[in-house]
Structure formats: structure tokens, C-alpha cells
Image (tube, rainbow, N blue to C red; front, side, top):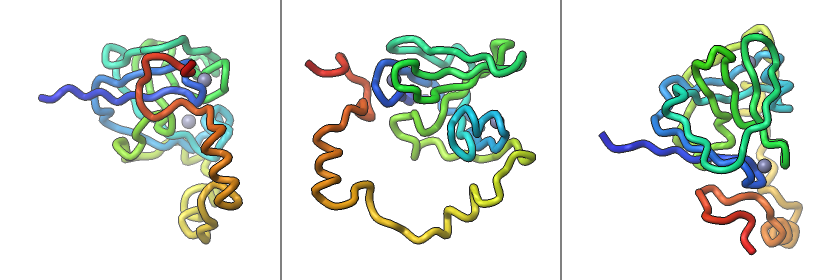
Length: 160
Ligand SMILES: [Zn+2]
Ligand SMILES: [Zn+2]
């Protein structure tokens, strides 16, 4: 068996982690708590047992959202990073915070009661706008002033 190592972290690079196992049941969650925790219309999670999780830089900030679970995020940039059951079971990272989200497609969803009608089906049918920038010059300016941590582990961050 080849060793799996899926790395990820927050936008500013202060918190980095690695999953040492391919998550078995990546999911989408439509519940209201996930909407709030993500600041988005659903959450995406890829969970592994704690022994297959490694924090490789920095520390999580933690908000206990109920007696059942807590949410982990970066206190410097605000990126939502993970959910963990308070019983110490699974730790599930947000799929968007992984360096290669393409490698972890969700296979099921939860939280039907909170599902926003346009959240899933509708966006698939929206007309494509374009890339991120308003113009090639604008895109170039974003690229040149980008402070986001790259999608791979780094020895030092930010660079000198
Ligand atoms: Zn951060
Ligand atoms: Zn949820």
C-alpha cells in the first residue's frame, strides 16, 4: 500500500495539516450550522480518524458549536479548516482547504433540512462569467500581490 498524504491549510499559511489516509466518505453538509461556519451555502468535509491526522504548522482556533462538536479555523485569516466531534472521534477537514480538492470528491450529503433550494442544482446552470479578474491587468495585479499560501507545503511562510 502506498502511503497517502493529503496536505492542506488556511489561506494565510499560518495553519497547515496533513491527512495520512484517503478519506472514506467525503461529504457535503447543508445544515444551518455548516452554512454559518463556512459563511457559505453548504460545507464540504473529508474525515479521518485522529491517528491519521497531523497538524504540521501552527494551531487551530476552536469554537465549540454544541456539546456534539467543535469547529476549527485560523485566527489570523479566518479560513474554516475542520470539524471534530467532541467525543474525540473523527476530524473532518474542509475540502476547499486541501491543496488538491479534486482528489477528494464528496460521495454523500447531510443536513437536508437546511438545504437552500438554489445551492446545488442552480449553480450548475449559471452562465459562465469568466475568470477571477475584471480584466487581464486586474488578474495580473491579483497574481502579483497574492498573499495566499501556495497549494503545497513550504519550509518557511511567508517567504522573506
Ligand atoms: Zn490563516
Ligand atoms: Zn452540517
